[in-house]
Length: 293
Image (cartoon, rainbow, N blue to C red; front, side):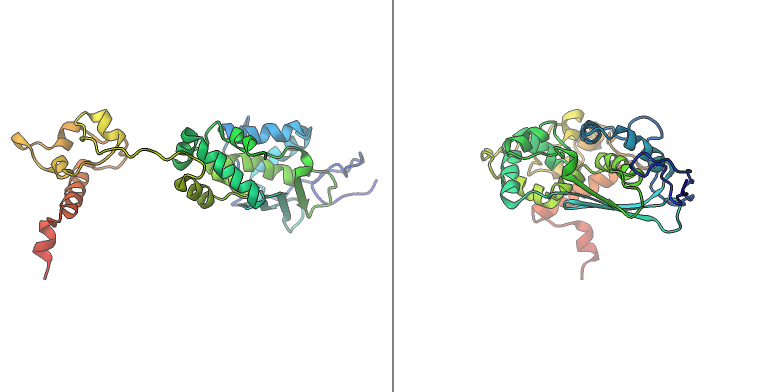
Protein backbone atom coordinates (compact mmCIF):
# COMPACT_ATOMS: atom_id res chain seq x y z
CA UNK A 1 0.00 0.00 0.00
CA UNK A 2 1.57 3.35 -0.96
CA UNK A 3 2.39 5.66 1.91
CA UNK A 4 1.26 9.23 1.93
CA UNK A 5 3.16 12.02 3.63
CA UNK A 6 0.38 14.51 4.18
CA UNK A 7 -2.15 14.45 7.02
CA UNK A 8 -5.11 13.09 5.07
CA UNK A 9 -6.17 9.47 5.31
CA UNK A 10 -8.41 9.31 2.25
CA UNK A 11 -7.46 10.09 -1.34
CA UNK A 12 -11.07 10.85 -2.25
CA UNK A 13 -11.56 7.48 -3.98
CA UNK A 14 -11.89 5.27 -0.92
CA UNK A 15 -8.23 4.27 -0.59
CA UNK A 16 -6.98 4.41 2.99
CA UNK A 17 -3.46 5.51 3.87
CA UNK A 18 -1.48 5.60 7.12
CA UNK A 19 -2.31 8.75 9.01
CA UNK A 20 0.43 11.22 9.94
CA UNK A 21 -0.05 13.90 12.56
CA UNK A 22 0.09 17.61 11.67
CA UNK A 23 3.03 19.63 12.91
CA UNK A 24 2.50 21.52 16.14
CA UNK A 25 1.76 25.19 15.58
CA UNK A 26 2.56 28.16 17.78
CA UNK A 27 0.48 31.29 17.33
CA UNK A 28 -2.19 29.81 15.07
CA UNK A 29 -5.86 30.82 15.12
CA UNK A 30 -7.53 28.63 17.72
CA UNK A 31 -11.30 28.38 17.76
CA UNK A 32 -12.81 30.25 20.69
CA UNK A 33 -15.41 27.53 21.23
CA UNK A 34 -13.59 24.44 22.42
CA UNK A 35 -16.61 22.17 22.00
CA UNK A 36 -19.97 22.24 20.30
CA UNK A 37 -20.87 24.71 17.60
CA UNK A 38 -18.46 27.27 16.17
CA UNK A 39 -20.97 30.10 16.05
CA UNK A 40 -23.25 31.94 18.48
CA UNK A 41 -24.89 34.51 16.17
CA UNK A 42 -27.77 33.65 13.89
CA UNK A 43 -25.72 34.47 10.79
CA UNK A 44 -22.74 32.39 11.93
CA UNK A 45 -25.00 29.43 12.71
CA UNK A 46 -26.78 29.89 9.39
CA UNK A 47 -23.43 29.74 7.57
CA UNK A 48 -22.73 26.33 9.11
CA UNK A 49 -26.30 25.12 8.51
CA UNK A 50 -25.95 25.93 4.81
CA UNK A 51 -22.64 24.04 4.61
CA UNK A 52 -24.15 21.00 6.35
CA UNK A 53 -27.06 21.08 3.88
CA UNK A 54 -24.53 20.31 1.14
CA UNK A 55 -23.94 16.87 2.72
CA UNK A 56 -20.34 17.60 3.73
CA UNK A 57 -20.86 17.14 7.46
CA UNK A 58 -18.25 14.37 7.75
CA UNK A 59 -15.63 16.55 6.10
CA UNK A 60 -16.50 19.50 8.34
CA UNK A 61 -16.04 17.25 11.36
CA UNK A 62 -12.50 16.43 10.21
CA UNK A 63 -11.75 20.12 9.99
CA UNK A 64 -12.99 20.85 13.53
CA UNK A 65 -9.88 19.36 15.11
CA UNK A 66 -7.60 21.51 12.98
CA UNK A 67 -9.61 24.62 13.81
CA UNK A 68 -9.47 23.92 17.54
CA UNK A 69 -5.76 23.02 17.59
CA UNK A 70 -4.81 26.29 15.92
CA UNK A 71 -3.51 24.73 12.70
CA UNK A 72 -4.89 27.67 10.69
CA UNK A 73 -2.05 30.20 10.68
CA UNK A 74 -3.91 33.14 9.17
CA UNK A 75 -7.24 33.92 7.56
CA UNK A 76 -8.30 36.88 5.44
CA UNK A 77 -11.71 37.77 3.99
CA UNK A 78 -11.98 40.00 0.94
CA UNK A 79 -14.65 40.71 -1.64
CA UNK A 80 -15.69 37.30 -2.90
CA UNK A 81 -12.58 35.52 -1.64
CA UNK A 82 -11.13 33.95 1.51
CA UNK A 83 -7.44 33.10 1.80
CA UNK A 84 -5.73 31.17 4.57
CA UNK A 85 -2.66 29.12 5.41
CA UNK A 86 -3.11 25.82 7.23
CA UNK A 87 -0.28 23.79 8.76
CA UNK A 88 -0.42 20.08 8.03
CA UNK A 89 2.20 17.38 8.46
CA UNK A 90 4.52 18.77 5.81
CA UNK A 91 7.04 21.52 6.57
CA UNK A 92 5.34 24.11 4.37
CA UNK A 93 1.77 25.18 5.27
CA UNK A 94 -0.95 24.54 2.74
CA UNK A 95 -2.47 27.54 0.93
CA UNK A 96 -6.27 27.56 1.03
CA UNK A 97 -8.60 29.68 -1.11
CA UNK A 98 -12.39 29.85 -1.01
CA UNK A 99 -14.20 32.01 -3.55
CA UNK A 100 -17.86 32.97 -3.72
CA UNK A 101 -19.03 34.93 -6.75
CA UNK A 102 -19.44 38.61 -5.87
CA UNK A 103 -22.69 40.37 -6.67
CA UNK A 104 -22.83 42.23 -9.96
CA UNK A 105 -23.33 46.00 -9.92
CA UNK A 106 -27.08 45.75 -10.64
CA UNK A 107 -27.47 43.09 -7.94
CA UNK A 108 -25.64 45.26 -5.41
CA UNK A 109 -27.93 48.19 -6.25
CA UNK A 110 -31.02 46.04 -5.71
CA UNK A 111 -29.70 44.72 -2.41
CA UNK A 112 -28.83 48.24 -1.21
CA UNK A 113 -32.35 49.42 -2.03
CA UNK A 114 -33.90 46.42 -0.24
CA UNK A 115 -31.72 47.00 2.83
CA UNK A 116 -32.59 50.69 2.97
CA UNK A 117 -36.31 49.93 2.57
CA UNK A 118 -36.19 47.83 5.74
CA UNK A 119 -36.06 50.81 8.12
CA UNK A 120 -35.69 48.79 11.32
CA UNK A 121 -33.12 46.51 9.73
CA UNK A 122 -31.19 49.47 8.33
CA UNK A 123 -31.00 50.98 11.82
CA UNK A 124 -29.50 47.77 13.16
CA UNK A 125 -26.97 47.62 10.33
CA UNK A 126 -25.93 51.20 11.04
CA UNK A 127 -25.44 50.12 14.67
CA UNK A 128 -23.13 47.30 13.49
CA UNK A 129 -25.65 44.47 13.95
CA UNK A 130 -27.10 41.97 11.49
CA UNK A 131 -30.94 42.12 11.46
CA UNK A 132 -32.82 38.82 11.26
CA UNK A 133 -34.45 40.21 8.11
CA UNK A 134 -31.13 40.45 6.26
CA UNK A 135 -31.58 37.22 4.35
CA UNK A 136 -35.12 38.28 3.41
CA UNK A 137 -33.78 41.57 2.02
CA UNK A 138 -31.38 39.65 -0.21
CA UNK A 139 -34.18 37.39 -1.40
CA UNK A 140 -36.32 40.46 -2.16
CA UNK A 141 -33.48 41.68 -4.38
CA UNK A 142 -33.45 38.35 -6.22
CA UNK A 143 -30.08 37.14 -4.88
CA UNK A 144 -28.90 34.86 -2.07
CA UNK A 145 -26.98 35.97 1.00
CA UNK A 146 -25.48 32.51 1.50
CA UNK A 147 -24.28 30.07 -1.17
CA UNK A 148 -27.23 28.20 -2.66
CA UNK A 149 -25.27 25.07 -3.61
CA UNK A 150 -21.83 23.60 -3.00
CA UNK A 151 -20.74 24.52 -6.54
CA UNK A 152 -21.15 28.20 -5.59
CA UNK A 153 -18.07 27.79 -3.38
CA UNK A 154 -14.90 27.31 -5.39
CA UNK A 155 -12.18 25.93 -3.14
CA UNK A 156 -8.51 25.31 -3.58
CA UNK A 157 -5.81 23.79 -1.37
CA UNK A 158 -2.21 22.88 -2.11
CA UNK A 159 -2.54 19.60 -0.20
CA UNK A 160 -2.75 16.30 -2.17
CA UNK A 161 -6.28 15.47 -0.97
CA UNK A 162 -8.73 15.40 -3.87
CA UNK A 163 -11.84 15.67 -1.73
CA UNK A 164 -13.89 18.86 -1.54
CA UNK A 165 -13.58 20.10 1.04
CA UNK A 166 -10.34 18.67 2.37
CA UNK A 167 -9.82 18.99 6.12
CA UNK A 168 -7.79 22.20 5.62
CA UNK A 169 -10.62 23.93 3.76
CA UNK A 170 -13.07 22.51 6.32
CA UNK A 171 -11.05 24.06 9.16
CA UNK A 172 -11.28 27.44 7.44
CA UNK A 173 -15.03 26.97 6.96
CA UNK A 174 -15.40 26.45 10.73
CA UNK A 175 -13.27 29.45 11.68
CA UNK A 176 -15.18 31.62 9.22
CA UNK A 177 -18.30 31.09 11.35
CA UNK A 178 -16.46 32.57 14.34
CA UNK A 179 -15.04 35.37 12.21
CA UNK A 180 -18.57 36.25 11.09
CA UNK A 181 -19.62 36.28 14.76
CA UNK A 182 -16.95 38.85 15.61
CA UNK A 183 -17.46 41.02 12.54
CA UNK A 184 -20.80 40.40 10.81
CA UNK A 185 -19.86 42.70 7.93
CA UNK A 186 -17.31 40.10 6.81
CA UNK A 187 -20.22 38.02 5.54
CA UNK A 188 -21.42 40.94 3.42
CA UNK A 189 -17.85 41.60 2.28
CA UNK A 190 -17.62 38.02 1.03
CA UNK A 191 -20.74 38.68 -1.07
CA UNK A 192 -19.11 41.78 -2.56
CA UNK A 193 -20.64 44.39 -0.22
CA UNK A 194 -17.94 45.71 2.12
CA UNK A 195 -18.89 47.66 5.23
CA UNK A 196 -18.22 51.15 3.82
CA UNK A 197 -20.37 50.48 0.74
CA UNK A 198 -23.28 49.13 2.81
CA UNK A 199 -23.22 51.98 5.32
CA UNK A 200 -22.85 54.65 2.64
CA UNK A 201 -25.94 53.32 0.86
CA UNK A 202 -27.96 53.25 4.07
CA UNK A 203 -26.93 56.76 5.07
CA UNK A 204 -28.01 58.04 1.66
CA UNK A 205 -31.35 56.33 2.26
CA UNK A 206 -31.52 54.63 -1.13
CA UNK A 207 -35.00 53.20 -1.53
CA UNK A 208 -36.13 54.29 1.93
CA UNK A 209 -38.75 56.95 2.66
CA UNK A 210 -37.33 60.24 3.87
CA UNK A 211 -37.52 60.56 7.64
CA UNK A 212 -39.33 63.51 9.16
CA UNK A 213 -37.01 65.83 11.09
CA UNK A 214 -37.32 65.46 14.85
CA UNK A 215 -37.38 68.73 16.81
CA UNK A 216 -34.92 69.01 19.74
CA UNK A 217 -36.29 67.56 22.96
CA UNK A 218 -35.54 68.70 26.53
CA UNK A 219 -32.82 66.71 28.24
CA UNK A 220 -34.35 64.40 30.82
CA UNK A 221 -33.11 64.36 34.39
CA UNK A 222 -34.27 60.75 34.74
CA UNK A 223 -31.22 58.47 34.73
CA UNK A 224 -32.43 55.67 32.42
CA UNK A 225 -33.70 58.10 29.76
CA UNK A 226 -30.59 60.28 29.99
CA UNK A 227 -28.05 57.47 29.53
CA UNK A 228 -30.08 55.99 26.70
CA UNK A 229 -29.14 59.07 24.68
CA UNK A 230 -31.05 61.29 22.30
CA UNK A 231 -31.05 64.83 20.95
CA UNK A 232 -28.70 67.13 22.86
CA UNK A 233 -30.34 70.44 23.86
CA UNK A 234 -28.80 73.83 23.23
CA UNK A 235 -28.41 74.50 26.97
CA UNK A 236 -26.08 71.51 27.41
CA UNK A 237 -23.94 73.53 29.81
CA UNK A 238 -26.69 73.06 32.41
CA UNK A 239 -25.80 69.35 32.58
CA UNK A 240 -22.44 70.10 34.14
CA UNK A 241 -23.10 73.51 35.73
CA UNK A 242 -23.94 73.47 39.48
CA UNK A 243 -27.60 74.04 40.28
CA UNK A 244 -29.07 75.18 43.58
CA UNK A 245 -27.24 73.56 46.46
CA UNK A 246 -24.03 73.07 44.44
CA UNK A 247 -25.16 69.79 42.76
CA UNK A 248 -25.11 69.21 39.01
CA UNK A 249 -27.47 67.23 36.81
CA UNK A 250 -24.73 64.64 36.36
CA UNK A 251 -24.49 64.28 40.14
CA UNK A 252 -28.18 63.51 40.38
CA UNK A 253 -27.99 60.92 37.61
CA UNK A 254 -25.51 58.75 39.50
CA UNK A 255 -22.75 56.51 38.05
CA UNK A 256 -22.39 56.08 34.29
CA UNK A 257 -23.88 52.58 33.70
CA UNK A 258 -21.57 51.58 30.84
CA UNK A 259 -18.35 52.89 32.41
CA UNK A 260 -15.69 50.26 33.16
CA UNK A 261 -12.77 52.49 34.20
CA UNK A 262 -11.11 52.49 37.61
CA UNK A 263 -11.98 56.14 38.32
CA UNK A 264 -15.35 57.91 38.28
CA UNK A 265 -16.35 59.07 34.81
CA UNK A 266 -18.67 61.88 35.92
CA UNK A 267 -16.04 64.61 36.59
CA UNK A 268 -14.29 64.12 33.25
CA UNK A 269 -17.61 63.82 31.42
CA UNK A 270 -18.91 66.95 33.11
CA UNK A 271 -15.86 68.99 32.10
CA UNK A 272 -16.11 67.73 28.52
CA UNK A 273 -19.82 68.55 28.27
CA UNK A 274 -19.36 72.01 29.72
CA UNK A 275 -16.45 72.79 27.40
CA UNK A 276 -18.41 71.56 24.38
CA UNK A 277 -21.45 73.63 25.32
CA UNK A 278 -19.39 76.76 25.88
CA UNK A 279 -17.64 76.41 22.53
CA UNK A 280 -20.96 75.78 20.77
CA UNK A 281 -22.36 78.95 22.35
CA UNK A 282 -19.25 80.93 21.44
CA UNK A 283 -18.40 81.56 25.08
CA UNK A 284 -15.07 79.77 25.04
CA UNK A 285 -13.36 77.81 27.80
CA UNK A 286 -11.95 79.84 30.72
CA UNK A 287 -8.95 77.52 30.78
CA UNK A 288 -8.23 78.35 27.14
CA UNK A 289 -8.29 82.06 27.89
CA UNK A 290 -5.98 81.69 30.89
CA UNK A 291 -3.41 79.74 28.87
CA UNK A 292 -3.81 81.79 25.67
CA UNK A 293 -1.42 84.40 24.34
